[in-house]
Every structure is written in C-alpha cells, then in structure tokens.
Length: 150
Length: 150
Length: 150
Image (cartoon, rainbow over all chains, first blue to last red):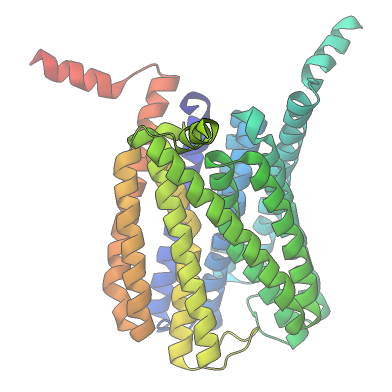
C-alpha cells in the first residue's frame, strides 16, 4: 500500500501543516485584537481571521476523506495533484478573508471546484470498483476492449 | 483491500455529498435571511439551519472514523448498513432542526444510537484483533469450536 | 494490515469515546445553565465547557489523521504511544478549561507538543517512503550499512 499512496501521504501532511499555520494566525490575531478565549467575537478584523480558520477546519475532514477516497479508488496521482491545488486555494482564501470578506470569494469558489472534481473522481472510482467486485464487470477493461475492436 | 471496502467507500462518498447539501442550505439561508459572513448570528430560522449544519459537520469526522474502524476491524457489510442509517438520520435531523429546535430531537437520538452501535462494533473488532495478534488467541474460532463440541 | 495497526485502531476508538464524553458534558452544561440550542452563548461557565468541546472536536480530525500517517508511514507503536499521551492531555485540557480559562493552558501546550511530535514522525515517514519508492533509495538501510562499516 505504501508505494502508491506516498503522494497522498505527503499532501495529507502538508494539509496538516497548513492547518497549523492557520491556527497560529488565530492565536496572533487574538493577541493583536485582545480577544481572550472563550470569546469568539470582537473587531471584524479578528472575526474574519477566526471564521477563515473555522471554515478551513470544517472542510479539512471532508478534504482528507475525498483525497483518500479518490486516491485509493480512482488514481493516487490525479488525487494528489487536486490535493495540492486545494491547499493552494485554501491558502489564498485565508489570506483574502483576513483582508476583507469580499477577498475570500474567488479562492473559495476555486477550492470548492477542486473538491467537486475530487467528489467526481471518488464517485467514479467507487462506482467502477462496485461493478467490478459485485457484478464482476470491469468497465474500464471492457471499454479498452471495445475501443480495440473498432 | 478494495474488494471488501467498496461498500464503505460508497457510504463515505454519500456522506460527503450529504455534507455538501447541508452546506448549500446554509448558503441559501444566508441569502434569504441576509446574514453575510463572517456573522453567524441572525433570525432564529437562520441560526437553526447554521447550527444544524455545524452539528453535522462536527460529527462527520467521528462518523467516518467509526464507519471505517467498524468496517475494517469488524464487518464491512454491517458497518455500511449502519452508515446508511446514520446518514438517513442526519438528513431527518437537518430537516427537523430547520423547522424547529424541537424537531431535531427524535432524529438526533436515532443518529446517536447508530453511532453507539458503530462504537460497539469498533470496540469489539479492535478487541478481538488485539487478542488474536498479541495473545495469539482467536476468540471467534474458539467460540465456534466450543459450540461444535456440545 | 490489521496486525500492525490494531494499536492505532485501539487509540482511535478510545479517542472517539473521549469525544463522546466531552459531548455529554456539554449536554449536562446546557441543562445546568439553561442554555437551549441553537444558542451557544451564556454564562462563562457554560461557554468554557462549550468552547473546550468545540476545540477538542476541531482538533479531532487532525489528530486522527496524524495518528494514522505517523503509524502507517513511520511506526505504529510510537504513534500509538503519542496518541495515548495526546488523549490524556486533552482530558486534562477539558477539565482545566471547565474550571477556568487559565486552567486550559498547560495541558493545551502539552497536547500541542505531542501533535508536533506526530507531525515530525509523519513527515519523516512520508519523506523516507518517498525516497524509497521514487528514488529507489533506502536511507534507513544505508544508514545501518554505513554504521556497520565503521
């Protein structure tokens, strides 16, 4: 297993490091704007950083789940590339949201699109595996065979 | 691995799609009740939808973790069935909570019960694997053997 | 797979049980301080319990991800031990935060340190696997060989 999934592992660790970076930014913002826990409300500058991190945290498990579903059931390589794009989008989202509520939108849509691609890969991968395992039907192989017959 | 776990993969992808649906509902509620990010407070109608989605998101990683622990260490089939029941319960929870705080209770208790079943399966599965691996004791096999001796 | 990962599975199930315990404490606090959902604000005593649970929930997927990355790519044994330390730290964090905002700090720093150790193990494990798989270079073996030559 380790051989094919090492790319997924690398993207996963990178994703955790990104979350650690976001969390540190919230800690700095709490100090800068003097918002002590358990309070989560304060100046809009603080609330934007707080919500940016909360939103990224909320999507983190969805992202990791999709990365591995698409990677294991469809393609580790394509899934890892999507993973890197997603993490880049989330970085720009966090920076954009920290500056203005408007600034979060473009990278948010970008990240969402990457997630939909991963959902597509996962669904397709699971569907093809399901056909192969339960109906003993290998669609990919049959498609290649059909193309070969032409 | 893929052969036995394809059912777990299908439930996982379905779970992600359900979360996507909940997230879209929050976006619609933000528009309808004019609550712009980063605000998370507003009319009770909005707050119920927001909290319903937040609660489902919070439980999502717990659910995915238990689904796979119970599936890998105990039974992929039983775990997948529990997974489908949980997702159905969460759908009814989200719909109920959107209408009234009271309406969330019955499906919430249902979902919690399904999670406890998954916790039971996971614990049992890990415990039996532990005995087998570290004490070289196969309880299931010994039980079958003992029943056979009667 | 099950043989080496049973320890990780046990720590994972224990982590889920700990989250279940924290969730029950929030339910008791809601009753005690009469804060009905969807409200999440109230007396500081309630807010501290609520935030303690929210913070543990937020870190749960990060923890599970790191536990398995470090366990699969580096060492299941070392990773499981770190996992137990983390769960113990989180338990003390929850108890400390429930009593005072100050009381959360020492166990929070402890848990964070354990997470950084898991990040170190994961990164090292993924890096060594990457070298082995893609550059056909087994650093661990070469190091042992070099030490043997001395």
